[in-house]
Amino acid sequence: MNASKVAYRPVGLALGAVSGLIAGAVFKQVWKVVEGENDAPSALDEDRSWKQILFAAAVQGAIFAVVKAAVDRSGAVATRRVTGTWPG
Image (tube, rainbow, N blue to C red; front, side):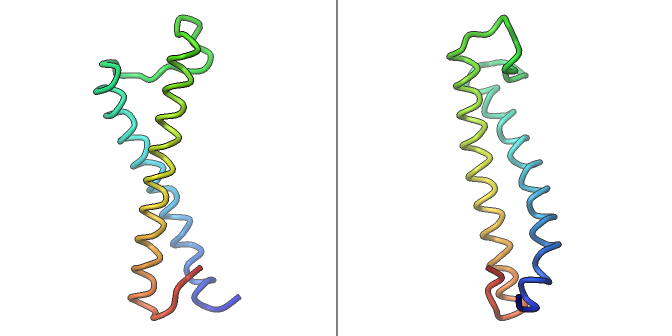
């Protein structure tokens, strides 16, 4: 493993945490627009339908994946600009 990959590890971990926070905030805002509710349904919420719970999970998963990919890619590009090598 080269020095660039080792140096990127803590950066990657921090970016992962940040992307989770960003994705959670984005999902809350999207959920408010889509369903008009402040809180998304929990899988254990017996008052919600299967359709509503699975839809919320799909939207949340898609948002998380897109935000994580964007943050990870941005971190890799920034690392290449600073170090001259790709961290992957």
